[in-house]
Picture 1 (cartoon, rainbow, N blue to C red):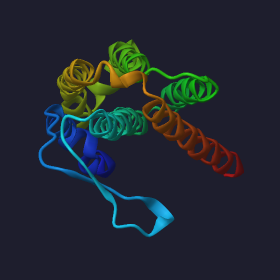
Picture 2: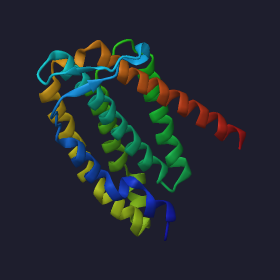
Picture 3: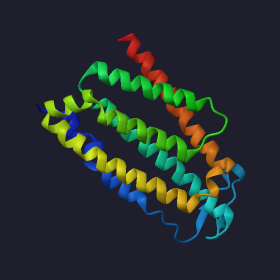
Length: 196
């Protein structure tokens, strides 16, 4: 069966490549921090300072979580069985909603939880059957484990480099903001689906 959506789905074409791109966390040179509405020219942060490391830790935290979240959702949306798709989408919605209500978020734990959910979904009999029914989906399904392994390596590298900064308030706030925005988007999508 030919499925045009699968052909252009970034998950199937570049999950491993995307994870590889972020797997080396590189902090070269000086970083210009915008001072916001003050109209100042900004300040340079020197490599090695705690502010510098927190800035990068926060940026990478959001990028990593967004990568995992986006790719997981691409995978869900590529499932052809609407009942199975709806079940896993509901699970993701509940997961995001639960985490949006937490005052304290641990990037390492929440990311690993999504990866575990992904592996469980991928190992389910239903998803395996869908994979067997479509050559396109089968190729994608086979590449998922490689991509998930790369993302797990990325998380491990991140934790090693930013183990201290992971509890920083700015980082927690940035990840929580992403989760809150994701929940708002999912709620809007849910409302749109009800209208149809």
